[in-house]
Length: 147
Image (cartoon, rainbow, N blue to C red; front, side, top):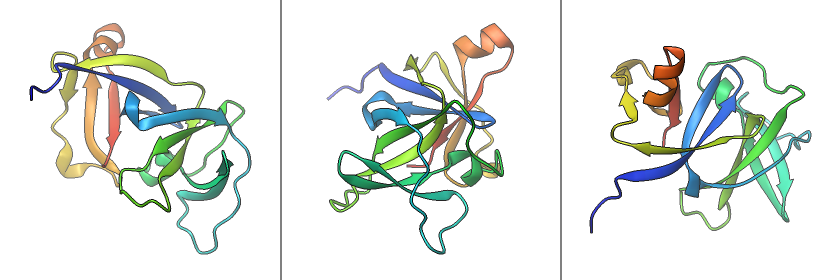
């Protein structure tokens, strides 16, 4: 079977950065509400948020990856994601976002791996640039979460 030459992705703005995820990984964007605390959790695990009858773990990618030491803001949203671990007891997780994500098409021609994988932050699979953003702004560094 041939690999697709393009995939649809979502560029998700997080505090002090952006995260690129496959469109199929994102289930829904919901309004941020104060999560239920989890005792002895690391600082990037903000707690559990309620979504469609589930108590979904809410993470701050910005804190995990060292982009920020705090999370929140008046534009905060929650991105509900399909968990990739295959655990039927936890099929979803959530990530704090700033505003709504932007749909984008990713291909070999538009995705540029920066080659800085030796120094990548926790939770980051690759630091990448998207050619459209790079051409428009002169830089377009994004992070793809570790899968």
